[in-house]
Image (cartoon, rainbow, N blue to C red; front, side, top):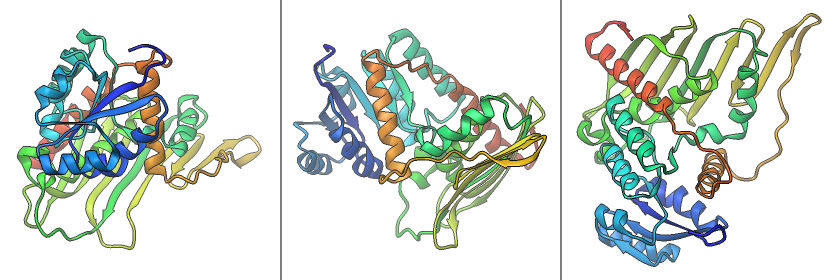
Length: 337
């Protein structure tokens, strides 16, 4: 791979996220060539490859990782495959971006990160909400202490109820590792911890509500008490009865507060309360797709050595907390970390 030649990327797993976001965004990026796709459903893979003008369709993971003409792999398969496939891709010398979660638990996260360290390749977990304009605008206020001592982060990731005719891999414990907590809670918790600087957890309390006709939870309520004395409170669910999804995060500090969605920042000064909410430029692209675009640009620049991409070691703590949350829900007690 030269500095001017296109980066050749393969996409492993062609579910909805790959079709709606990954392939459309990657296909438009300068200096990127989506060279191959792979999916367990060969007919689907061939149809999607034809739609996006992708020259090769592989049938197995092993073919993807053995391909000498691929510089990187984007993994968008069911959760239970993430760690194994990420480790295999890194060991084969590929740069890897894997969809969230990194694995099903902290042990899998540690294993993947060890492989990334040994391989000396770029490795990223697709926490795309970190690349949203509003979160990027809010984080410096928390980092710089402008809100004072942040003592509570309160948020929700509630998706509008949509009746499904048949369960998918997301509704099976063996393939998903959990339900709404594993799909939505991982993202919401990562966002709160990331904005707060990823402090260690001291204890976790979680209650889950079972889904109808599925093996995993539909809804979860989570409280994480942090070693600093601060706390995170999250509501997570797949079945909000309402007109639209509800996503938000609010930080409460001793000298100010901040929130997304919508973005707002207030500070307490000697003269009183002031509104210091940054004015963001109008972006015609929706927050979700735009965040992925910025994340993929970062991935590409990191592969070219133009930007730093530190190993996401914080994912070990994230998955440790998720594991404690499920234990708390099973045992019906607060679990010390």
